[in-house]
Amino acid sequence: MRNTMMLTALLFAFGCATNDATPGSDPEITLIQLSRVAEGTQYDTGPITAQFAVEVKNTLTEPLRLSRVGLQSIGGGAYTLAPYSQAFNETILPGETRRVSFFAPAYVAIPTVGSANGPVTLRGTLDFDTGGKKFQKIVVQNIGATGGG
Image 1 (cartoon, rainbow, N blue to C red):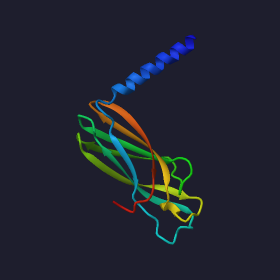
Image 2 (cartoon, one colour):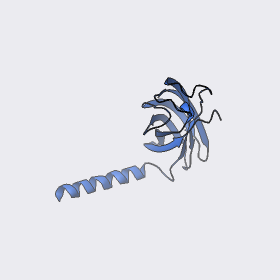
Image 3 (cartoon, rainbow, N blue to C red):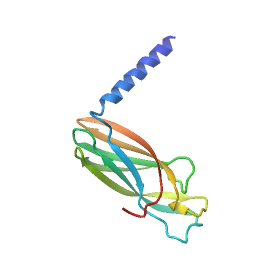
Image 4 (tube, rainbow, N blue to C red):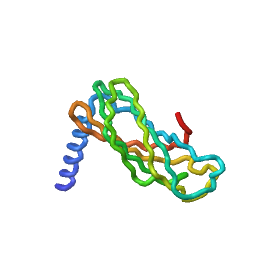
């Protein structure tokens, strides 16, 4: 009973601390795969270099700084993306949408008709700070190759 009460109090304190970190609503985050592998390579396996972008819309009332983006694939998909992260120093003004892009190594293990252009589920971890407070947002999105944009 005592342990349950302590755990409840700890979870409540953690929840309050998390909620206080972001004034207003959460930023809107979209994960995008920009690169496409060439047609005719759909049955190739092995390492590839994939280009990704992350779009962030600042829905907060003050500037937001994106300091790091981490990506990794989860579950099955067209390729495997091992945990990869990249540092950024992007300030996004209130109401503004900003896109950052980067390359990451991926691996196609199973030959498919869609090759590395097929769907993959990615987990993105984004580190932000605003108003002197740091916070992290995690998104999970199913993406496919767009070929640019």
